[in-house]
Every structure is written in structure tokens, then in C-alpha cells.
Length: 115
Image (cartoon, rainbow, N blue to C red):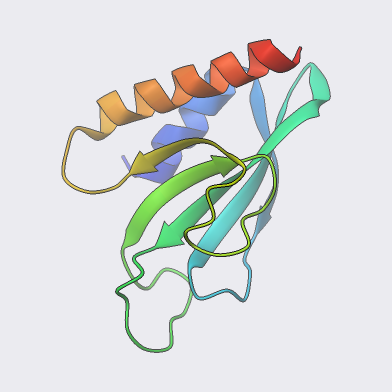
């Protein structure tokens, strides 16, 4: 099961909805999702799939390794902009399921703080 699919399922279980999927022209942004809470559309965030900054050359969508997955209140200005970060998953070696659980828990806390 792909990590994007696992994230999508985990979000849906917690009543988050993917309302938009975008592909930017930025080299570091493979894809980003706008997510909002099903019961209050004012509670939302962006989920960015950020490419490894060591990637060299012109890149097409899907090329390069995902370095981190970042949830932010505003779309980041660049790959290392953490000024509006809510939660992130470092995609280096490790147990993705445990990282995803902690990531979702942080998003749930964000939801509770903003309800």
C-alpha cells in the first residue's frame, strides 16, 4: 500500500477531506493537497510532498524521492519553510506506520485547538 494511500485513509477516518490536489511548478513540490475538516471547512491545511533537496536536474512529477511530508496552515514559500508547519513526516528510514500515527495525532490536536 503506497504511503499516499495510507495517509488518505488515515485522514478520511478522522473526518478530513481532500478538497483539492495541485501540482506546482516548484522543483521541491511533487504534489500538494488542500485538506479541510468535514464538519468545519474553516479548519484546513496544506499537505505538501516535498522532494529531496539533493535531487539534481530537471524533474517531472513523480521523479525524485519524497524527503518529507509537511502539513502547513499556508503553502510553504520554499522546501525548508517551516514557519506555518503543523506536523511533518521525515521519510528517512524508519517505521512509516508509527510516524503516520504521530502525524495524525498532531493533526487531531490542531483540529481540537481550532474548533
